[in-house]
Length: 85
Image 1 (tube, rainbow, N blue to C red):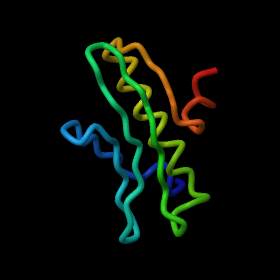
Image 2: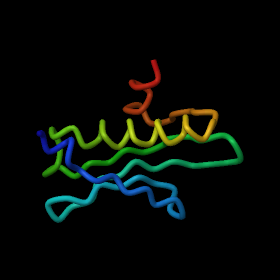
Image 3: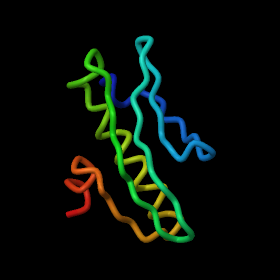
Image 4: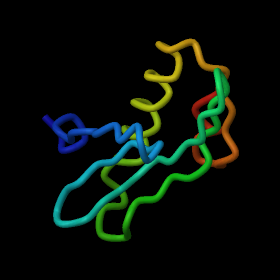
């Protein structure tokens, strides 16, 4: 099992973000929610965590949550746009 499969994605709804905490660092996917419209606007993974699939896991988790809540999904983050094709 890869590290990506065992990572825990925490949804911090009050801060409008999804977070992975590992190896003493924090990666996040931030969004803005207005009514039924959601905009994923920022993805950040610290240098020491890059290349492990963490950003992908954050985005897939965030998009699955948004779809399950029937939100109108937009992405002003270029990384998230890649998953909306």
